[in-house]
Image 1 (cartoon, rainbow, N blue to C red):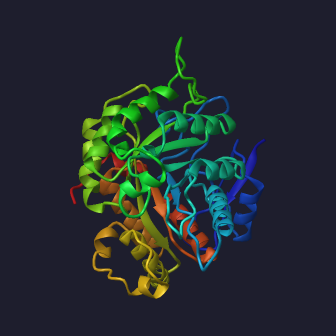
Image 2: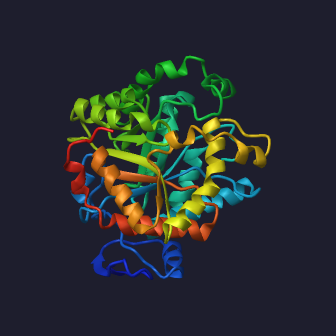
Image 3: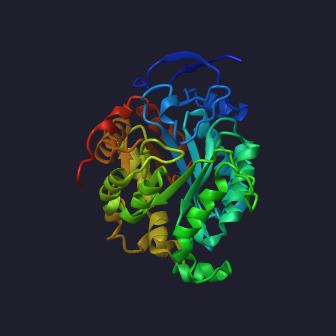
Length: 399
């Protein structure tokens, strides 16, 4: 059924665009957008009878606007319980869908008191059932914590339930505070689990390929076109992704200093494979947008204590300790953070895409106030409609 989508905004800087497309948004998503006086257009669409995988994503963009996505940690705010935190995660996914975000990914962390993201496949199944169009995925599934067969079974089942909407991002960490050894011990995994990453990744990819005669074991994901992304924060991960012909996602919030070398390594070592003919990279970064630079900076001041806790990888004894914690190293960790009003955010994103040659952008936003967070997502969606992905065709700029 053709749906007429009108892009309206209360801000004079928003453009009016009306077009018809065979694209259905969830009722809840439309309600969220309508309540704020804006319904924005999706950045991509999926024609009937054609699956969008990592090999043909670019060919099915409606225009050359920069695709944006959201990385969610499902944090607890103000003493909320797990149920409230997860409910907000669903609401963010629905809002992102209404605003035309391309992907909604969920992180994996264990034994972190203020995060409720310990079971990504379960949450992703719930989010996918409460949305209709946005791609949902792991950002990422920590391979050392599982057997390749288990991940293939979980995400293969998700792909069967939600065709064309599931992404599988793979990471090599454990997602726990402190040492990886502590997390692996609690998960009853062998201490050398991380050392087997390369072999386990090869096994996982084999389990997700088209079924062959006599294949054993059987995995639900075989032949379902589950896009596998390699997540990383180093040149080693980038090089591996390139050699395997996989899409690559870099987290600037983990290791900002290696961003440019990693993006260069990925494209230098890329080899076309069974699923991708050309490299495809995404960059994730903290982005906080507001109507003015001052408002955004004020919100960032409230986010800093949360980031201090995260970067220290330990939970402070009290909230006061968190606020008073040393933050000398934080500017380096947030060197790619973008904070400001619409024009500041637009120029910041343009500069990042020009420097990194990234094909997509994934945002991280720890804003406790729901209305302010939704406004931030709305501003980012608006400015990215004016950013041409053609900027990614320029050479990667050294830092």
